[in-house]
Amino acid sequence: MQSEEPISLRKLRSSKDHIPYKMSSYYAFVHGKWASIYEKHSCGLIDTMKQTDIVSEVIDSGGFIETRRKLIRMFMVNDKHPYTRRVFRSGNDIRNEEVRHALRYMWMLHPFSVFCLYYQYFMAVIHIWYLCKILLVDFALIGVHLVFKIEKMIVDSIMCLSMFTTFWIGYYDSDQVLVIFEPKQVAKRYLKSFFFFDLLSVIPTLVLILEFTHVAHTYPNAIKWLSLFRLVHYTSIEEAIRLFRLQHEMSSTFEIVLNMILKIYCVYLLSVSILFYIDQYSYTLTHGGHSEEEDHLPSHVHTDDKKSLQAMYRAAMLLFKISRTSVMYSYYRIIEYTITCFLAIVVEFWLIAKIYVIWQRYLVTSSLGEDKFQQLSVYMTYKGLPPDIREQIYRFFDFKFQKRFYDEQEILHMLTENLRKELPKYRLELCMSNIQLIRLLPNKVLAIIVSGMNSTFYCPGDIIVRNGTQSDNLYYVKTGTTALFDENDKEICHLEDGSYYGDISVVLSQTHKVTMVAITQCEIYKLKQQDVKMGLDLFPHTQEMVRDTYHKIILNNRKNWEVC
Image (cartoon, rainbow, N blue to C red; front, side, top):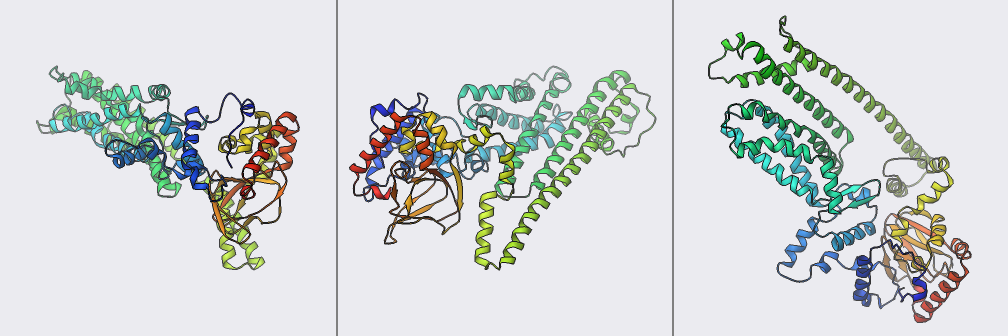
């Protein structure tokens, strides 16, 4: 239920709200606009933000409204992005993020949006094309073939647009557990990571566009090596592979194998560049730009072209340790073979270690998972449970553990007492900020009662509370959907992510007037009356004001307060 907050109670609230001012104002606006929806039973339990679309409220005038709304939704957080449900565990968290983004950072792009997802896929394809085709021919052929020049200009033009776009895409900070949209922080992060590498890698194309290549050998012999800085974007390709794997629910082996191939290819590309660099400069200076091998080639074959092909071949042979060569009398040729062989040894040991770690991890995780499932299967067989109940148990395990089993009691036992109290408090205060009781309590009382809250998992059809039983808990729906039924088994309303029931019960003793049933898999936090009283006893003045406020709520809603 909703009521106007007394001025004296507002003073008890912290000066630093969990919800920004603009957002809280918007909550109030939406609540006033949609209050008529709840006149039938006045439960006030369902978060009013669920009944409206934040994009529709922000864009409500002008031309092409539907087109603009669809465009904006492409740039906002979306369930289709694989990271959305990993960062925002419930629909209520996602809606809060949508409101925060729409009201404060409308012109920034959300990193978990549909646009950013396919943008990362597109740029990964561009990087792969650049590394596999353009960078190889860039060593020798781009200086003499117009087709390769045009191809490089097009790809690097896309890269320049990507550099500009990156300044407008937020990023997720795992330390703060928050998506950062502040333009200064976004720009600072990009400047510290890929910006200067990207800038250096497109300089050769800028030289081509400005037609500086009329100076003999200026582009092919000096500036073209800057293109190698694009190798740092192998991490972008790895991230795209991970997103693709998560989006299509593929095995982690798929990601690991592709990442290993990518790293080996990057080492190969680096080896090719080293060999070609030594051949083009040091070897050419030593032998005057001519060797006996060139006499066997057609005259129209470019020297750099020939040397680059030789470098590719020798690098591949050396990395796989199957190269054969004559006795070398060139100091520079010995250097290049030594460097490449050393890289081959490093890659070989890294590959062996990686395969060993992957195999051990697979054995451990698979044995743990199979052991747990085997115990569960044997237990249900021993008890003679019917197939429908077995399926419910399997769904419950999948919902609670997400196919990754752990011993919660053992983990909690290893933590300190303060850390054990912090775990349920994590992000719970922000999620429960719409509860009337929570808004009335000082931060010290809030910290005490929230630390005592425990979560319980319910399967579809489970009865959470029954009509006529003693009511002394507040039920907060963290994830899932529940339904409330009256004494005649008539459905009153649904409670979804972020909804709550029984806030009056933790202050004033009463009996349940409804039956609460889980419709989907649910995770529900319970706030006990005993914990609330224990916290309020420390602040007698606050206890009196809370009781007075809830007495007024009951008197003002005499017909319907029992439902809430």
